[in-house]
Length: 502
Picture: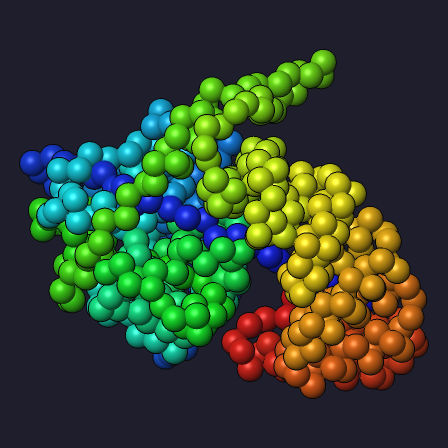
């Protein structure tokens, strides 16, 4: 049995909110819900973990277009043909209006449309949120949320987040708990829900549901970004350094009540959406798209070209040109956005432009370049970039960790071990680093040392995955009794968390 785990590193995707809605027709035919959508909860507290995944999968859609891939959430329908999809504005901003494609749970592709604004109570206020609403028409009858939550979201409750991972192209589920609710003011662009689910690249716009199957909000920001630029309150004030470090630990979402509170009553009626039981909480500061990003967006259209090969396959390339007075910081943030959108060649170019200016934070540019190269399949080049990152800033735990992962992928286990040991030296209380060391040592067939490493991880955090990995290594050593005990412990922990061991 071989240890199997993934360490995911995510960048913060900065976004600028714009939302448009459709004016409803005078008459509102009632929609019908397919009988197959109805689920009977298995216990008084709510749905089982598998039922929650079913609910989430049914309402999670994939949004694609212009080399962008992300997620969205089916929230309502009018009659039996008009469906509404909620997503982030930072997703739709990079897709031409006529190129929005929505893929539903059955794999069918629908033409998406950004809706007009006439159904909003206040268009300018709503534009401050990182939200967009799309519509598509179909004769198919898709399931909707079991309930759209219309009260203040409570903290310390269990949640399930879902969305389509850019890395795998498949739907991904992330269990977690709401750890913090930020209001009065909220974070900029309407972010209020802080939760510890591991939100991956591509899950932006996907749903956050409670254990009762209620739609609480949508994903938007991942934990542990490279940059801290997104951590600003809606009134323009900034958190302290200590507060930022706490905010960075969580993924962030926008509550569904923020959308409901900005819609006209007749629109809510048309789409059978509930009236929110809270007062509107609108960000008070307008955060508009910085001029430099707008310029880069325009120029990217000029120097991005299509490349076709002899096999009929195609991709894109970038013509390098003088970019006026764009700063290294601007290029770094742009590369950050492009990386999150899966536009890796363009992201690499942006990071290179930042590197050319030799800023004080050059290590971040090399780190971002390494991530983009790795996702592009250029792992050796990624290693070179990451080595530059740790050379520029030797105490970057993230860079050392990703360097170890890249070397592992190349089969360079000795180099991977050196890198992960350096990360552990810098952050000795991080259990995930010892888990990574277990994998490296297992590849080197140094099994007893691998067990010593995972023992330390378990001491710091008795996680089910760690017990599973230790059991896998014990099995390789022929310690079947110890392996069975660890696997049983992992199963017990998963059951305690309300999950299933598969």
